[in-house]
Image (cartoon, rainbow over all chains, first blue to last red; front, side, top):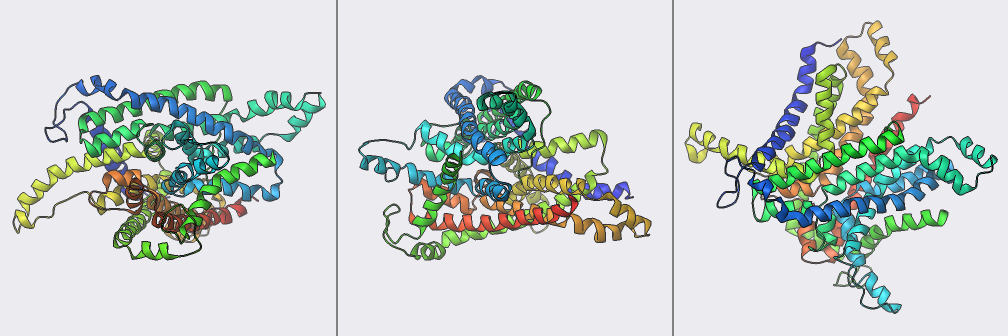
Length: 283
Length: 274
């Protein structure tokens, strides 16, 4: 139908962008991570493993990320699952679309503004003041791991609800009837029928949230107040404050490698058990 | 069960409600509520820094959304004919650009562009006909913001438009060809009208993404300030009613665009599901 030259022309801008703004920058990061820091910051060409050897200097950031990202994923899962179940199985189809849109809409709006709202709520004049009125005095919520977890669940909940909803919605309701006809108690039905069939959705949701959490910066920066910080916060510090590009590149490269390893291990474990991955649309 | 769902919806919407509520607060402090007033909107809109950053955000969002939907649609159309290794390569690139953390994209773009500029600027100065002083100096700023935002929004458009092409009725294209339409005419009269809602939805999502993006802009903005960067640095100095007003306006803009995008995607999806 169309000549290959038309095809090439159509692909040219996208190719230029992908190569120039994605591949080249990522290569630069890898190259820089083997370099040295200049006297006034920046980068001096070299081939050394010194930056990688120095990674333990930012161990706390890696440790926090590797603890808080799985914890945040789990918290989001615990909150999201019952809602997804409710939307897929219990709610009448008339309301379903509206309720689903209401879940997804916050996700597409500014995460900055939404996280900011929690500074308001968790800050000294918000919830702690209310708690004080009912007699629970001196509760500090801001700048704690709890605040960061609340922010994470709040920010990423929609991303978890949707894939679980999709896998539960496909579930054949007759299976549930069959199970209860065969004398299974509701909980047994859930554990033996519903839960296993929803695992692909759970796996997809967990993976999406986990990946995004690994690179999180805003939520710990705003709600963790320098006490709970992720690798993302260390990276901002390294690139924008101390301008240590070589070391920063090594930290960034390590983050991506850890992400790739955990995600591929996870895919192997979870996806194989859960069967084929569902195609999930977030729109 | 229903109560639980209600609680989750409250959890999702109360924070947004709080911001909107307090943005109309007459009090001088962010957190004591003293009657209704729109003064903070007036103050925010009269603040030249806010207006400057709003203009920057708007320019960047518009430019990157236009480029993303144009380049993304072109690529999505072309990728239909691409098979084999090349296809794997493009698919991998597109997913990498969506999945890689924004912060890594920001960092990588920053150091790559600064390094490229360090090479290109002296070169430009040496060959410039009217002398090295008159030579343009490439710098981080609007251009780098637009280029970086175009990368990830373009991938988004490719994914959305490709999904739409996959759901398209092939028979119509065959019918058009059988009726002796040129490929060009088939494209304008059959393909484009069918994929147009997806392109528009992609455009609106790209605009919202770029308009709301903080982390990539934080690295590549140079001396420019976008609205999210302004809001972020203001939050650092404390919670103010002015930020509530800006936040409410930002939420209103993205909500309007999103609902339109959602509407575009749904309206056209239905007929194909017959």
